[in-house]
Length: 391
Image (tube, rainbow, N blue to C red; front, top):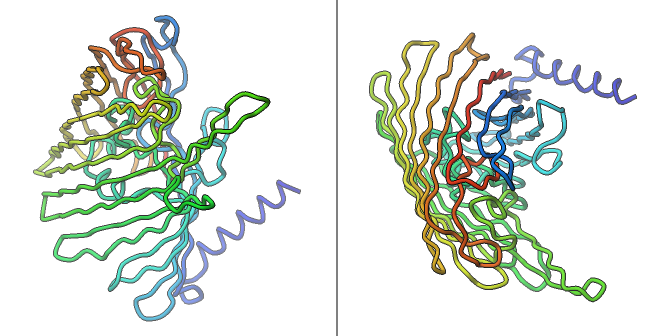
């Protein structure tokens, strides 16, 4: 029965997509997606030891996912829009994003060429919308991301229960705003998320910036006489309890980001800066990350492109003073418009001391990009050879 239902659904999608324009001139539904997988080698990836790792490392350039998106004309310049996007692990077929069916996006809304777009549901935040297209991440993904993705450089945040507005583009300017409510009884702000983003484009120059505030509702209760804390937030994928931000629970996170890129001939050059603060729940300790990055992308010809990126991150707070230097290199060769193979490598060096979950000063250890490989060394390197197909 499940196979039959899947076949029927696939048939309906094909019928909708292939029907004559005269029958569906006012609406459209598109099936889309990407599969990105690679074999990789990582040094110092054993967690409690310095063991190396060889295995599959997926979604390096682009998140492996499939989705359905569509529009319906409602008259005048007004359209209904929707997008459902589900991420999965191409090595096993299992769902990504903590098993959420549509973990990437799930929203519906209204769009007007005159007044902008208003959408409701699970969405990317405005800062991601305006800034990610200007970063090295858009070309070579997670291996160019900020250390630990502390500033959401790699777009790991997915905002539940959100309302987002995106303005039309006026003289090169556009702005977006978002508010998300967690639905906590007795408190509007508990677990909420707020964000503003703006961009400007003029010829080959593009600039963007924005600010996000994510609050966490931490509720402590006794379970069999033992205190247990439950954290709730609308910002799914908030970067903490990882090798770089070792706090298990936070009360809030604020991120400010600016960046830009310039296109000249076959070259694209970009730079970005961010400031991100994580506030520990139990102690109130604050760990602050200031990150600067730059990249250069070169299209050697219509099929082959090369890129190099560098990022520097400084962590401070409560006596901590750690620094992370990261160098990324990548090449991408297109076999066709939809299929490409890539080779990427990244090296990171950590120095100084950072905070663990108990606010103790501990040696900072390397963890490349936002891959999350725990190590005990100051250095870590990763190389991947992968393939991507888009549909």
